[in-house]
Image (tube, rainbow, N blue to C red; front, side):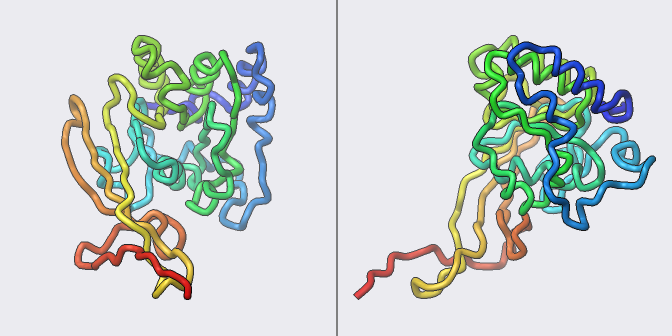
Length: 258
């Protein structure tokens, strides 16, 4: 199944968004640039999303077992609750390989945090405050962007199941991936993340180095399965990693001065 980047262009999506009333940031989507690191340099002409698997967008190795396809299947809806960092981690590998991602209606999303988790932020479009046009903006993005992120309540998802299903159907028909921050009606895969604890502070001194989280996975239809996975988010290098099952976690304890 060809995806949005191979079937159309980001410019087409920009033009469509710009025609919507009340979307002041739509025209900035293609120019949402931050100083790029060497790893974020633009690909040579002819490379990019077209070179990525037509059916599954890649994810970091630590995340591959969380989704039944080993990546993000085009046309799917995946909901992620309890951790914005986990949601951003799912964007990292695909954007690093040339795919575009867009985040709608999440004004507090941290670009620095996204970059630290490996997201190629020069291919991350932000539409933080679309207001009442959020559903229309989301639908337009699904026509031309590989991965689109929305808050579950913000697109009417939990308040309007019919609208949520229509957006999922649009993602399915256009070959995009719809990622939702929170539970979403009819999602194929739902991930719930909870913090186990932080480590890195020794006797009350030092810096928090890594966080261990527990991710529960549930699915529907062909993606039906239930798993529980321990991850480091962030891991020792600041990105996501699998937790060592043989390792032990020392929870933080209170140390009183004096």
